[in-house]
Image (tube, rainbow, N blue to C red):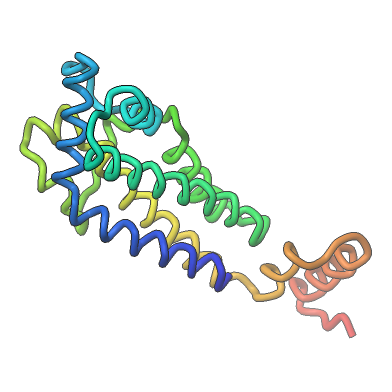
Length: 191
């Protein structure tokens, strides 16, 4: 669990740097939209940002900030996989994880996504930009980070052995663990 928390902290640090450059990010997206002659459609997916970066990005500043965004999204996706390996989950943690995985998928439509208080990322955009072009893409990372923090909070409430169980036991150990859980649940000491 500590490794997962450390990975999340590392991503949060990268996001803080990215957040300081949000205007550069939206300007880079605007330049790419102009180069693509695609000024009508909003930026609606990670895949679209990837495509713009690969095909319509003409300067190093724009490329750097777009790659930073894509790198953070990739790390969030990998962290989702890491979460799955930590424990088999509960209905609550599984739901949070599914939301995260959906949000960071390449083709997920982000156009209606909007971060709300305490995140002010959308507030830095003009009304038109927030409503029509970039609100979803700038809201993505803070919303996924919130879901991941919530996943960790719920996971930390689970008995320690549940977390160890998934990462360290198989076969006969798994059977013994299930018997222990059943006895413990029923209030009977297994010894």
